[in-house]
Amino acid sequence: MGLPPQPVAIPTMLASWEPPEITARDRCAARAGRELAAYTVRGWVRRLETSKDDGDWHIELTDRRDAPRDSCIVAEIPPPEFGDVYRQARADLAVVLRGRKRSKSGTLARPVEVQIVGAAFFDGNHRSRRRRRDTIDPPHGRCNASVSALWEIHPVYRVTGP
Image (cartoon, rainbow, N blue to C red):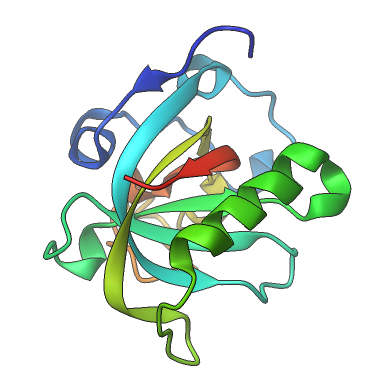
């Protein structure tokens, strides 16, 4: 990951990043293609879940403050025990969100603009196991139910304000 991060817009990720043929059965598949690069994404934090079973902080981002919340992507910051970079990313996100009201489910009363840097990851674990592999099962946050929404920024290395 020594290359500088490439800027990418959330609508571009959702509309033109082809989903690879990865499913839950490919849980340990090596990263390939887009997953070998780091990206800079600017977006609006709509929801933050900090108590997931895997220990990751799950951030739902939309392209605009007023975008439908189901047009989001997910960004995830791993637990701090996996590295100081994640400890710092969590601390930086906490600073950006300081004083903002969140519901019990993590929804922000008013979205907050951020810029994140991290690696692309296709979360095939959510791809439907049924015949229709172009849908999501189980749900992937509140993001749309298209397979394109399984593209994430995970792990997140850096978070800054606008």
